[in-house]
Image 1 (tube, one colour):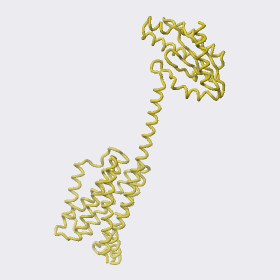
Image 2 (cartoon, rainbow, N blue to C red; image 1 turned 135 degrees about the vertical axis):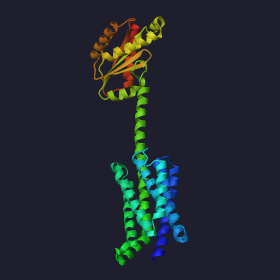
Image 3 (cartoon, rainbow, N blue to C red; image 1 turned 120 degrees about the vertical axis):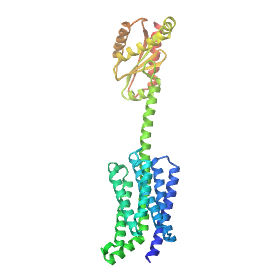
Image 4 (cartoon, rainbow, N blue to C red; image 1 turned 180 degrees about the horizontal axis):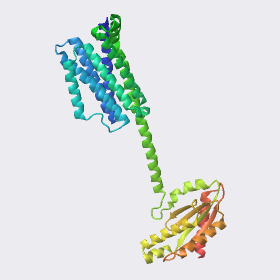
Length: 381
């Protein structure tokens, strides 16, 4: 009866492992995440180990040591690659073991185990004890990253716990020196006959932990990437809204400026340089550009930090001063002209027009009014 139960249980676990291996292979083909590549190797190694077990029980080969060595080598590779994948999630780029070291450990473990371990029960006791210790050590080593890989750590812990129970059952089954009663040994044998089904359930939970951890980490990285994209978009927008010569905002920034000041109202000052074409013709465009920069700097210094100073286009500038009345604007314009008079040659002259934007009023209408007032002064001059 135990043999039939064992065969059924082992068939269930082998089918389960083949499905898991196929699933992780398909998942890795759709993603470049490093941990998935390690987990593909891990689940394939686990399926290979169980295939060796099935081969041994059904074929009963003469070379017990060779089959045993292959089994424990694949089983150890499963654990180490599983832990390497978990490490790649918590600490990307870090290697659990170098490739030469890993190969040396696997070969040594398989050869020594195949020569030294005398029986099937001893194989089960040793191998499951090694699995439990390594998996538990992996959970503890990843402790500081536990919050980010909780599902994976839970799966590793569950599989480690089952491995310790299996190792104990194999130890009881060996009943060395008659340490255990026969009834306890029979219970251990019954448990071992069904243990493959329990292992299959534990490994499905572990695989679920792998998938959930990858999904959570991918979502988190996607959120971070989206955050940086939004920051880059904001930076690009600021660059697009800024005049490269004067470092002032350009007219693309006006909708945001007007949206901010419209509820409380503002004063609009339209400025246009007089004789700027003659400056370019007489002194060259380099000097003309310096005049624009000097004028922009003087306007910026003549108004408050909260006032928006905008290069509207060419030699036209606009100041949007929230809450300021016309008399205050006139005073600041006088201060602006005084600053410019103290500057180097060529002297900069300008015409201006003022319009008030009432609370809730039309920014376009006030802008046109300031523009008309500026051109009216220019004609009078």
